[in-house]
Amino acid sequence: MGTQPVDEYCRAIETYLTRKNDGHLIRVVGPSFELVSRWAVDGVPLKVAFGGIDRYFERYYRKGPRRRPVKIDFCEADVRDVFDEWRRAIGLTAAGGQTADDPAVPSHETAASRSLPAHLERALLRLTDVRTRGAWPDRAGALDELDKLMDRLAKELEVARASKSGLRGAARLSVIARLSELDAALLGLARAGTNASDLAGLERTAEQDIASFRDRMRPEAYRAAAHAAVDRLLRERFGLPTLTY
Image (cartoon, rainbow, N blue to C red):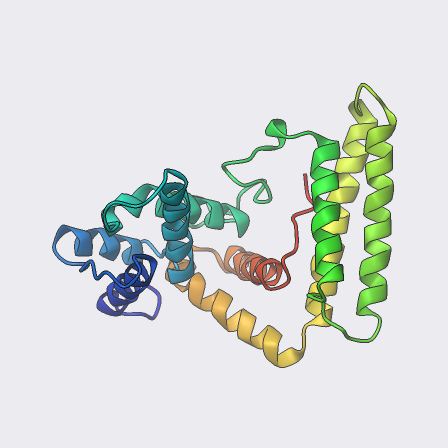
């Protein structure tokens, strides 16, 4: 399990679960300890496990007032789902040693499940939010470059909306290819706009997150996964959308 002992990992999960349960302590012992230990051994980063717990609680709250504290066992499926999404996003398969063909599409939302114009509009709205709330790094030229990228994205949205029947064939493929280019440009801007010490911290975090996979990966696959893990952290840091469709 990377560099963190299993017992420390389990205590961290227990502490987080207690906080989510409004201070009600649910011990991670016995079968629950074995369950969480498997997460640790399988390389589930703590923040990914926390994300799975959050997802369960969000669904739990939607059902109405809570009646009893949540046990960690109830969160297993959500933790595994978020873990699968995280691996796909950084280019890891279930085996952990190969890069995925298309890590940009989350498992719970495939390209076929949403229209291209809707994808473009949502991405543009999120970038506008990044711009207006000041989340983007305020370094020389950074905001200007973001504005230029948003203009390009807006033009692609206009193209996608131009045909009432929707884009087809080569025109659709062309827009999709440009979105991949824009996504790479966006992440490049995020990297360039992040100061050296912060970027180094993100790189350390990314390496810690994938440390348990290193021995199972080819060097080039590990480097690609580490780079993708930093990209994911940059998306989280600035609230960036995935432009790739």
